[in-house]
Image (tube, rainbow, N blue to C red; front, side, top):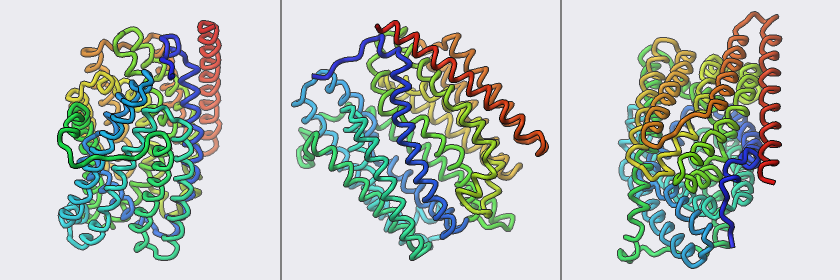
Length: 498
């Protein structure tokens, strides 16, 4: 029978580090494979092809977010609680309900992608020339929705090792498929590669989930389906939030495309370079945040009945993320010129100033994300939606204006500014409604690492002779600060638990 977590365990920084380390290590492998995939993609597809690939992927993500009902996220909380109780019959029944709604969402998403393909083509490219490719993307939207549901089952049942295995093998298969198709067919291989890689990842997930809970759906009984009303109601707000977020990213790429075309530049190449900078700054750095859904969210959900315990959980997560993220970002800024040459090609060097300017984005994200989960843990979907929508508004405005006035570096500054404002909104809103407050120690450590990160970013713009000396000094100080605090806290909490 599963054991419930004690308050001491929830406050244990060592536990947070354990699962952050597990998923950070797995995502490290994932990122390495993604790096290889992006390198070959850049070689075979060039900047315009990378822009086309990013446009297709983001569009599919936006449509999927609009049609998946948010069930994959809202289901985790209830499955996790049933797992704690140890009621296998209830788990089997609820998972069947989740899968049934997910299947309906998958069918809806695929259908709307195909039917509205002329609209998606015009929104992205100001023409209807990509209508057929968007029709071909319909199965990708359906597969991604089903895949999200199976991952929700694994997260709720705490199958963390299975999630880690699936992520690693899935990334390896995706690498092989994409390299082969891009090498053989270039731009024409983009959609087949997306479809096959997502399909094989889904097969991996079904292999693991079916062993835990046999795959069964029921689509013909409304009496059965309506039992998922609460799950869908919570999920709809999350789905709408996801749609707004994904839609804002599509809108930004559409703005960059149009601005570039108006001034005589290649809109697709601009989108490709922006996508490279965004991937470098945001996507790769997300490896440190990968424990959030799988480990942090279930723990936080169990702690919401006690404000003190809740705040301990949130502050501990912030501390770990900040202490890991700051030195990572300093090193990242130091190596960016080499990373772009290594991970892409010389055609993408314009992404370097953007990624440096956007590095603060990930730092603010490390602080704000654990707080942002409070609304979901409290099942306050409407407040979550409003807060997340505020970020999408900041994102579109600041990145669009930043690119218009400052090019790629301006768009990077816009990314950082949008998340700084979002952090203020998150703190103010959830302090007022859920009683969240920063621990003084957490604030002090976060501020010190913020200053070190700012110094490291500033060092990157110094003359070549001083640049690496100053940046390396900031990196070493940040690393030593993080290591000493993490080591001290782990020892302290271990003594308390004993």
